[in-house]
Length: 121
Image 1: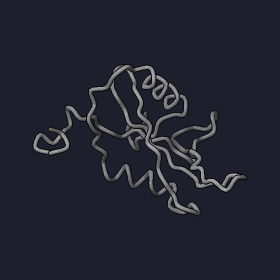
Image 2: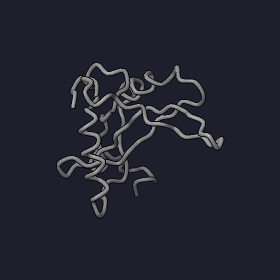
Image 3: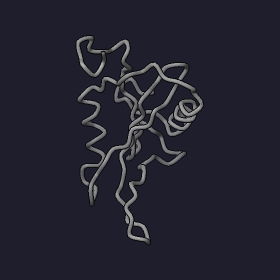
Image 4: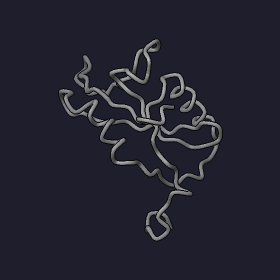
């Protein structure tokens, strides 16, 4: 993972989300997300046509729960339904400089919780 901008490689994202799906239970209640990093993820999709959205995947790396975030692109299917396609870097692309990024910059709760929040008690 890049310490500078929170981006991770496509392979890390695949591994971490696969790990999460194999994890039977979770003790994470929430994730704390730095605003500057979230703005970086948003900047990647803000010029998309349609309704730009971000998708968050639950993931796990070395026993630590993660939230992996990707931008999406709105696509209309043949039947008229709307699908939001993940904007992922190419497998061989350097994730540090890729146009489409996969972001991991979250801190899990606990321990990074608001002890007085009604959502945490």
